[in-house]
Image 1: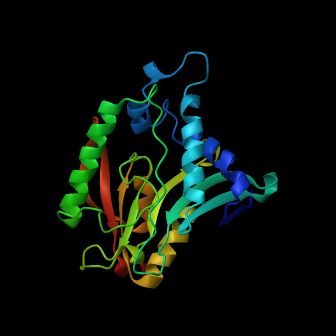
Image 2: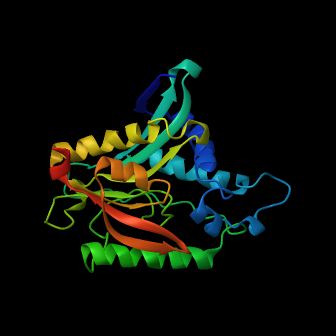
Length: 246
């Protein structure tokens, strides 16, 4: 197996959306199962398939955003099959960031909006506790910062200075790895792509980690800020200090 990390092509969006459905499947991912509960899924199609059109639209929105980089991990031994991906929101290099495209609406018939609202509250409270009353308002992003914690979000900021102007941020929207390729270093390679940019700019990294992702971030040197109880399962907000990467 030879893994190559590169930028994605537009025609690869459907494959990335399918991989997202596999990596964050309601039968295996805790938060996905709360937001897209199994009892709301149609009985005539496989679990998780009802959200695929939404996932595909969301990936398309991200790909069409100028400062959003979609990165893929491909197995060159399998005809460049996509086995992992990461979506990074990058600095635009100007004082005013462009207005981000609107996120596609969540599929109403398979989404538990009460759970989604509770999830938003949990994340907003953590953002406020970490960054003050403005929360993530000073961070530009091409997609909702409150979508799901399974979409690991990373905010890169100057250490000890609080959130910086939005055009100075790099933001990890999500990382997903094919379940058959997990624990083979692919998530680490995808995370490295963005963290190296942060290190060059002297920025710390903040994220909210799932239980599955936490070991990876700890191995990178991320420190726990606080635990977050997500419907009975503990997640953690974490920070990687620039001093640990230099």
